[in-house]
Image 1: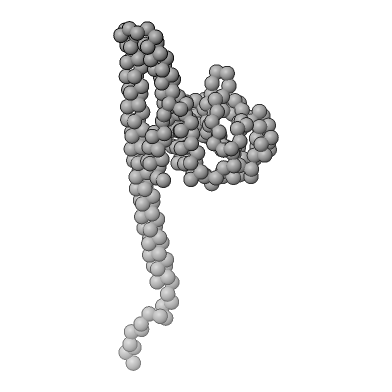
Image 2 (image 1 turned 45 degrees about the vertical axis):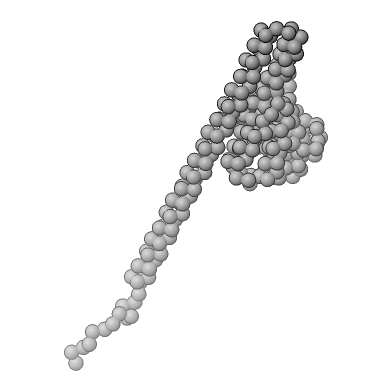
Length: 253
């Protein structure tokens, strides 16, 4: 699946399910992009982290010491070999307990979404050395935005349900006004998300096209350099040819 479709698929997964649909779609896309043995989404909360597992194991993969660092910096953290680092001791203990040696932590909030990280781990050290962070970063950033909207939509649906119950219990027309306001707020949120996802997909296309143009220009420059080098080598060879190889003029005798 190309990047634009991947971003739109994350948008389409938004529902009043507290982010479960977004997590499932993100898991599928990550599997198509890179290999990992364990994975989870961790969102920073005041009293810890809210988590969605991307693999069968439900135990936490990283502690708050790492999740908070990634959320605050909005930068990728890569632990190529957890046995060789003391930077995040609580996370290191969790990874060692899970039998994982390499960890890749990508920020969720690069597109304005929730503070947190997507965490991918492998049993072998240096397993993420050749991974394309540009594609992963775009997916995870969009997932953070979609997850935020999904959680907000879930909260709105719950408020709508409570307002409906209140309206039925009260039996008065005034009680329906909060219900209408919540419904309008929900629809506005969905429209904003659709517009934001379309703009992000268009931006990703522009970046891809710009990269392709730069690569084509670099290839053309390299071709011209090779041609110039070949021309210089040819001229040097011609300059070094012995005079004896040149045709002689006939003598007067």
